[in-house]
Length: 219
Image (tube, rainbow, N blue to C red; front, side, top):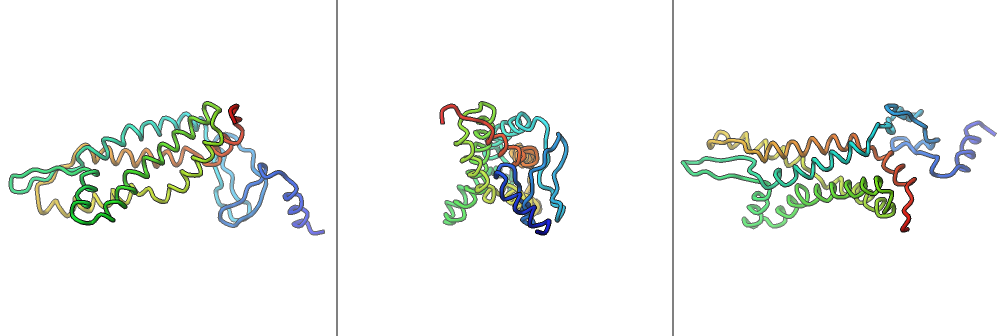
């Protein structure tokens, strides 16, 4: 029997928790045992599978809390101040949603609200609950469900698109009125950066592993 066939049969006989599949080329392989800082790569296509990160739970928890603290000022503090003919107005993410709704664009207002406010908050709350489940060792089933929910929500969180829209608006309005930036914009940028770092630090592989080895005494 060819070597590849032997390897395939031996892999099929192994328990699923010892196997990994490359998301790029679908190669089935044994899970690599990594040390902190090491990265697993697919032997066929070279795709980076995952990296073993040191103290990922504590660092991820700190980033989630920081993001939650930034969430309220990012959405409700003024992003910019406009001065047109002596009349000053300020705009926030929330006032933008209300403005769209009141101008008759209810559908767009709902989409903006979901993608820029509701979904990012739900993602952060899911991540917080998952990390607390890992730390406490309880609620494993709930943690698994919430982490699956988080992955479904990732495609709907579009803070970077909203930030791009804000920057475009600032450039266009700068020639039409006296414009100054508000604290809300700094908080919004900070929230986006924290979430990017969180995506890097909170390794999906390590989260799944941590959830699978924890045993919920209440289950």
